[in-house]
Image 1 (tube, rainbow, N blue to C red):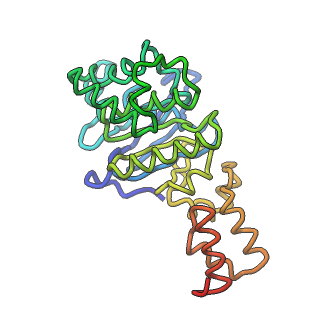
Image 2 (spheres, one colour):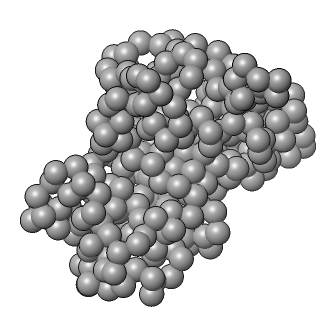
Length: 300
């Protein structure tokens, strides 16, 4: 199932996109073949699939880290343009798309947090005073106060470093944020903080694309899940649509969210809990509320 591709509703459009390594050589290898898909604006999209399926390589093409070979990618109304092996509009594209790599804290390299955060916007010709205002604003958004600005980023905890790195990307004010395994290595509190950041960004109208193995998080906050495998997009839809496809889940080795797993166990005991698949609870609290509604009706 693929999104109908219309520019008006999509932030990124893939058209006939193929990713081929060692093209026209004996060891030519096609990683992804003829993708046609639209990532809708203002939504949180999760990209899932087995290791080696091409998830990270795909997103690296969205902002020109890798060059498109076959087919095209459009970011809003801007095609990624390649001429003589170079991306002609790479700076314009990267101003629209912020990429947060796995272990984003490795992106930090300045002597103070303020210098690290203002580096990105100033590279896009934002004046220093405005860049500092943005540093304060986005540091607050990721849950850190202004007292952190003069501090050396290398003295922070892993979770704090990651938040500073994200603040630096946000200070560029891209319209699309792409995260590669953003909760990797974080403790449960750090994971929760990351999800809250995603929610805030969505409320600001940003489009979020997340590559992850953690489908528990996808169930809680994703508007859409895209499953990649066998060189193509196998299926897209909300988390419940994905995980009711038992063959897909098994074939692609997707980790079933705990809430969905609990629902399946309840259904196995009593078919009346099939109603939960219509309610589609995203959190434990919503699951408990749904169970009580089924058991006790409006008296719960």
